[in-house]
Image 1 (tube, rainbow, N blue to C red):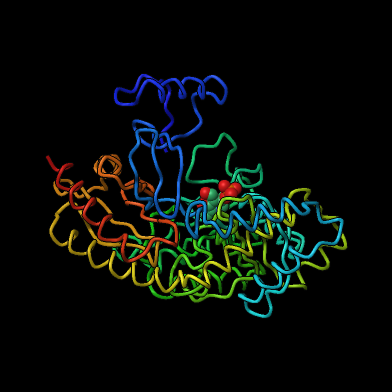
Image 2 (image 1 turned 45 degrees about the horizontal axis):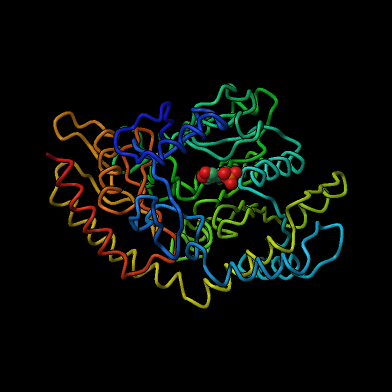
Length: 434
Ligand SMILES: Cc1ncc(COP(=O)(O)O)c(C=O)c1O
């Protein structure tokens, strides 16, 4: 993410420059924005957005408009509910119950309760609270390059973005291994986790939970050695901690092979955290947990959340699940992903700056290395992201060095869109080489 400090960027129109100045004046100059020259968007539909420059861009970045920008079924469902009744959960309404029933039917039977929230941050915050209450411990394990949200509790365990809060005394971090990096293998990774758990136990915090994104997307989509997640979860469980799967990125069919990242990565979480794609842009997040964790907590804590559990949010969530089913979005994503991967692999094979296709389903990446130094090359990745925008396709980048392209389109992105994105990528790789 780029924080622009001045509106004097050369290529933006006078109107966009004016809007930027107004934004700086009211939101401050440090709120993050993408691109060296910010993109002003005026409308969107399906997998395309229209810029104030009149250009249509293929969206290969945004996962919130999961079933497609401004999907008519979602717009209609929300509008209809807003025009009927939209009240908090201290009154009985049908939509949230229907939604929770449908959503829970997509989970293993033991994960049988749901909390609605307004965001992924709120959901992670609540999941940690539940874990602490259940285990009577406070220690949390997170990866050393991760982001789980913006509340104070989460700032204390944020490792991938600048935060002024120091890492909490009750937090320990671990490095995710990558098969491409032989200098830090499975044994090293497990030794680090064992050490972290010992420290938490010796300091009296104990282990409440490990919190991770099954794709480790912020970390740069590492290729994990076989057995890593299993070993991580076993160690945490043996220490009395819970496994929290942060599915804000990996949930709702993102991996194309399964509905949830934990299924794709083959582990059994104690709690699941949901967000971003859940409401297609209508604020909606959630925690899925078993009754034996939720019920005692709810007796001891009157948890109420004014805007979450609203019928309108539930209508959005219901519409997303319905469109996913009716339009067979996971099947389409499987086709598009296979096509995308094959095309990306060809580009990797032909380019000495690229070392491999990463990720799964509709969350893909390519890593850049400087061929002369062998070091991660975030600068070239940044230039390619900018060039892709010039070539009409929106993508981003992830990873500790910003060296991995982040291709994470709406799930509605189909096999007909892939060639457009691949052509632009090929063109950008050539343009950036010059
Ligand atoms: C993995 C993960 N968890 C949680 C969050 C926080 O979600 P929100 O921005 O909805 O609070 C994010 C946001 O980027 C995320 O990527």
